[in-house]
Length: 354
Image (cartoon, rainbow, N blue to C red; front, top):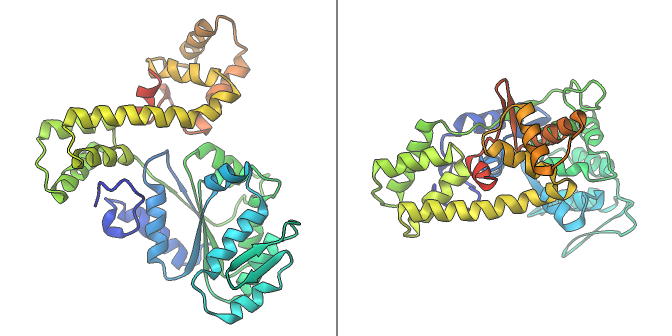
């Protein structure tokens, strides 16, 4: 069902992402060692990744780096190593694989699963090298990979080493905090270990109005609901091509809500979710929220945003410090910078900060 709010798993559950799906699958089929999937929140990156992994014929593991971070407060190598090994061995009956992996330092493989020793002696280089020597293609997919930066382990260097040395291991990385992931990987930074490495970068875009209309029409037809065109047009205008919001609006209608009730409920739920997500950034500096509120209320030029924040704060702010605030909001994906100024790319994020 198009309006199913859970991450999609099958091609027929996706809408109009054939091009991006083909790019991912073709890149892996051709042996490319690294694919990077970028896009702001709620554009369907996780669903696209799920479908690609399900359709590819290779063994794979999907790691939610944000979940690892929320559990451990970092991205420790032993947690990542355990997830990689669990994914590799899941459903495996090949004794050769188990034999090759069980002698890894810091790893014990038992009948009930995988146990990593607490001394943290596991080497991810050795884990990947052993997997590679088994000779089967293995895809390591890391969702919200920017969270790997919260670690003493040098994951970008690990990936660069694997790309140089291993024949059977490929990586697919996704990120909604686009600037942070780009900084972490350093694919365009001459100082980075990953600079100049062969990779495919795919950027998910918002739906155009035509696509948003068609998505809603197809979804309503699928659930047997006849919705007037003016309601579809208003929903498209309010939700501006963000497939996650369009899906939840459609799901609210599926649950029996009226058009107005579905939109209002969505905005209320979205506001709580967005502000909860933003709270971690707000703890670093209250100026992030003040800048977001300024942009949400129509201030887009650097100077007018700064003047608004200074007025709200009641004091002058150093130019360099304020530029750092806006640059951070861009890196976290909350703002987009264009020649016209700074804008909030998600209409419900804008609504939450008004």
